[in-house]
Structures are given as C-alpha cells and as structure tokens.
Image (cartoon, rainbow, N blue to C red):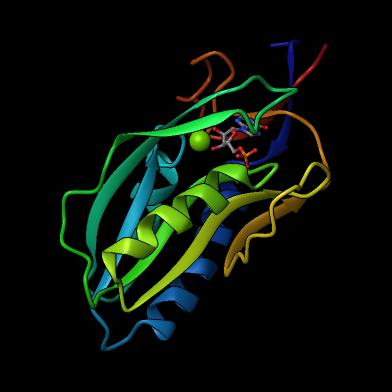
Length: 172
Ligand code: IMP
Ligand code: MG
C-alpha cells in the first residue's frame, strides 16, 4: 500500500525481541518476575516477548487513557484498568509499545510505586526521543528512533493498523 512505508521488518523485530528476551531471562533468573503490558499497544510485543524468555513469568495488563492529542499528549492521564496480580515484593517489568514524551510512563511508574514491588523496570519496543519531556529511565529498548509516527505490530493510528506484523511509518 502506498500510504505507508516499511520501517522495521518482521525479521528485524523477531531478532531484536530474541535479544531482549535473552537479556531479561539472564537479569531475572531466580526472581519472581511479573511482566505488565500496557494496553492496547503492547499486546503483540508482550506476547512475543513472553514466548521468548526462558524463565517463568507471570503476566498482567494495565491500561491508561490520556486525554490529550498527538500535539498535546501530556494532558490528563487516568487509569482505566489496573493490574490484578499482587505485585508486592515481586519484580515488575512494564512493557510498552512506544515512548514518546514519556508522560505516560512517568505517570504510571509513580502510580505503581504504592504497590511496593521489589523492583520496577521498563521495557519498550520503540524509544522515540525527539519529544521527550519526562525523564524516564528505560532499561530495555528494542529500537531507538528520533521521530516519526509509527504503526503496526500493536501500534495504532486511530485504532487502525495494529494487526500488521511489521512496523510502518504513515506517509502524509
Ligand atoms: P507518551 O506519554 O507521550 O510517551 O506517549 C506514549 C503513548 O502514545 C504510546 O503508548 C502510544 O500509545 C502513543 N504513541 C506515541 N507515539 C506513537 C506512534 O508513533 N505510533 C503509535 N502510537 C504512538
Ligand atoms: Mg500505548
């Protein structure tokens, strides 16, 4: 299709997910790991990641709504679905599709602190740096990009394109 251009292929994603999974498996060996996917965008990435790790892992999901726009993303953020597992004293890895301004993750990590996990780290498929406003420490990064709007492999534009197995940028 001509309205989009391939940015990251299936094969590149597969290879990178494998590398991240190896690092995560090594880092969390012997620890109670809970991976928390941020809905909806992270559902495919998380599904691939958990099937690639070689250690036991529990899985939960969280969902936030941000009432902003692409140009003013740091509007009001609210929790629309909390996690359901008890993460007290467990090692939590938050799994996100893409970090842009960082507002969502800054807000979420603050929110999750009350739950007294043993540790809280962040894994993102894509780290998009140009518009970063909040200082978030990201421990596992799939791909780093400067800018652009991406879709596919879970990422959407107006709830479209999530099903695509590779990652594209939308052309104007
Ligand atoms: P942040 O709070 O600005 O870091 O925004 C992160 C959220 O915005 C992500 O979870 C995505 O849902 C969405 N987002 C940011 N950039 C993109 C993009 O390029 N494609 C699709 N969604 C994006
Ligand atoms: Mg998202």
